[in-house]
Amino acid sequence: MKIRLATKQDIPAIRHIAHETWPVAYAQIITKEQLDYMLALIYSNQALEEQFNNGHYFFMAVGDDNQPIGFAGTSETEPGKSWKLHKLYVLPGVQKSGAGKALMQAVVDIAKAHHATQLLLNVNRSNPAYNYYIKSGFEVAETVDIPIGGGFFMNDYIMKKQI
Image (cartoon, rainbow, N blue to C red; front, side):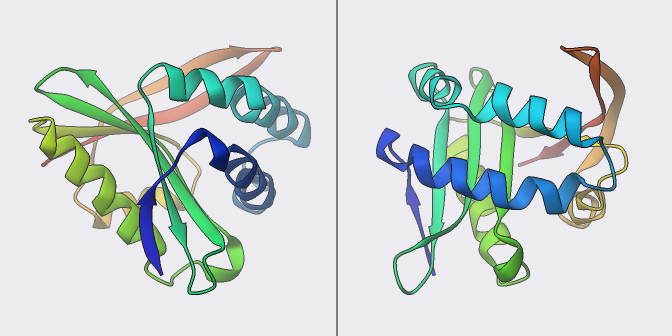
């Protein structure tokens, strides 16, 4: 497995991984209607292109066969201080392979290269990934309910980690 910087040509792979991981990750947390709404909102071709155009960096984890198995998305939120991990997903069949940890390290490395001292993320309060983030050195900074349209909310923890 290796980690590489993604390009806009990776948008189909990012969309594929999101559509494979979200139903598994969120089926017990949010309704199918909210899941479908959020996938369309965040992972449409247009939305991903806009993220690339607005300074988001994406990293791809690729397996030994050079096929994408996971991705992470990040961007600077406060120059010289903080970056945000927006997305980190690994295909269900290869979770616990080290891909998530390697993607997280790529995000930390780029944040540090831009002189950031902290990394932020949002995680659904019922998401088991919360425990992974705690083990990775994150702490809860705030509890939020964010309206995202369509009558839906993201019921999240905002977490932070000093890097």
